[in-house]
Image (tube, rainbow, N blue to C red; front, side, top):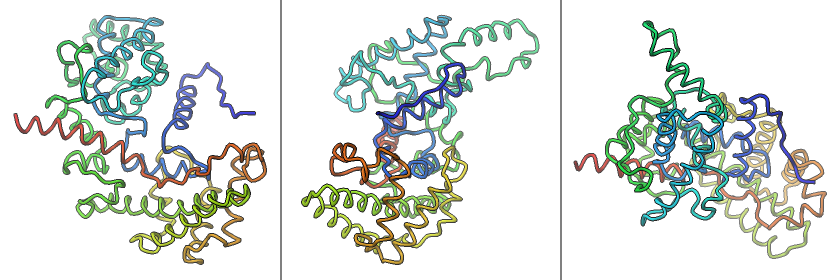
Length: 401
């Protein structure tokens, strides 16, 4: 029987939280066989706040406010507001695909049947970057937009406008650039200089001290697979360098657990080719582990760095990581045939999956493709790299002007 997630639809805040949980299952990095997603996402939010692995291009951070602001200017109310917003977002698809640069277009394949709209993907980021001023879920915004209109009407007739909190009347940042002429019929992903400067300012002001803000302000785009391979790593602020070091440590450490998990399943399934492949993967991982610059970091500091990021890292998860780390150190990374390592993996997976454990459920094991959750954690860096490249292209146009 497939797993389900249910909530009672009378609490908008709970509904929004549930939708964000569902969204995580669609993200490319969310294949989480050993329950490490909370740690991974805590690092990701600390390094690159307001981002997700579903975000594709940075100009969506402007498309969405432009779409909504146009509806607000017409005083469209519920229930038409949500439907018209959806239609407006779908109308972005064809103009964006008409450009030569259409990588990252939402709806490139699904077209008008698109289910996950860009507004839902960027909603949290718009608030985190200080572009969205109203503090509510997207559901609440759609349903109660008429209350925003009413509050604005009242404020216009009051001498003391401070009686109305700004959060109840202002939905988008006051310096949001105007959309280009012809929007949304003639549109691409290239930022105008004014737009790029606005996004950079919002990011730096709202997330001051984050690595994302530092990169947006001080570094040119680079192409590397992981943030710890950045050529300017030595120029990062000390706190951010420390965070990157721990992120690399965790990514490297726990990839070995994923390889061992897949090796054990291959042995259980009697798939000799896969057994050889995963043993080779473990050998290569062991070599990388031993040469990694950050291989003996304190887990106490790791938990301190990931605390307070909005993701619950359970005591059991911390215990699993700690026990795995201890065995990796004790075996010098030679974990393939270590009995304690194998027990850790089996116990962890059975706890997480219950009757759906691939170790005990043949049907679940038959659905295993041979490689599950073995990719190194990138902490959204491939997506962030694209967002920063878009931003700096726009800033470069500003410098040329």
